[in-house]
Image 1 (spheres, rainbow, N blue to C red):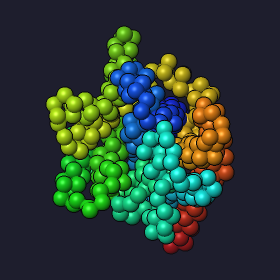
Image 2 (cartoon, helix red, strand yellow):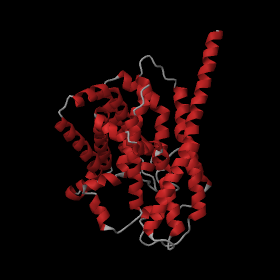
Image 3 (tube, rainbow, N blue to C red):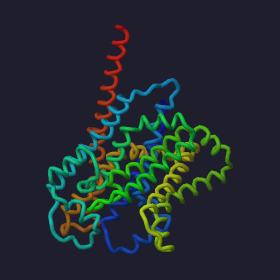
Image 4 (tube, rainbow, N blue to C red):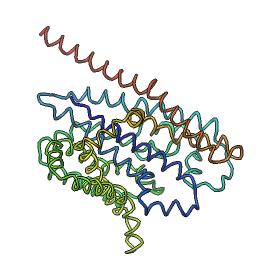
Length: 387
């Protein structure tokens, strides 16, 4: 099966924007940060957009084995590999977050920092909270130790049913599959309206909004299913039209995420449905960016630059550990070092932890999944031959 290295690099660039987003998000009262949202520089701090990017990319990559000619994907093998790939590094990150919390967190006023920073490590470490992070069941405070873990909960939940989604996508056309995605978003919205807990959690932490994010896995799978036709169409465009298409994709991706805020201000509109609609706009931009990246030799060449490809290799670990490094650094060096020096230390620690995690956690976990599935496949072959 062909591996698209451009997608690894895109994932790395997206992870870098999440890092920038969180490094800036710890501040409060800085007017120029708000103004960045209305400039082209917003793309460098588009954190939520990057998560939608991850979901679409996951749907794209996970669907490829199902489309391979003559291939029959064993669901048990798929799940074993997925759990090893996602859950083992996730658990390692949870353990690291617990240790850094115990080592560096201290109560007290932290003026100048946003509620995002002051809230995350402010919850007591109860057995229930730790158990929720291990089991990933129901709606819980999945941002209490590391604010990026919510998306990994969604990745793992959707992985459990992804083979069944693929059965639907392979059997039906793109319009029907896309309609299923819209239906899932609508169902998530309906459940949010009908089930109103006494202590509501953010959208990302509510179990039923997993249905909404499932739609973007479907979009990624559809993109993979029709990639050949889309790439052929893009390659037939003139050079100027290719640039127009790329610029359009970048614009949609960059600004769709603030459409809900703009609509609320201009038309006094309210409702979570605006945020869900923005996510669909982001996903549309992601599809354009992925398609043009695969179709353009120039873009592919840029994405295969060693430093960018390296960023792609460590992207999952960078995503997992950058907030842990950031929070630990700020608490450790508050009133000791200038903030700019603290942020440099946090950045260096993020990269160091990511490299170590990639080498000593991610790669062994992936290898473990391959070993387990190859042994199971070998035993099945021996059984058939014996019969």
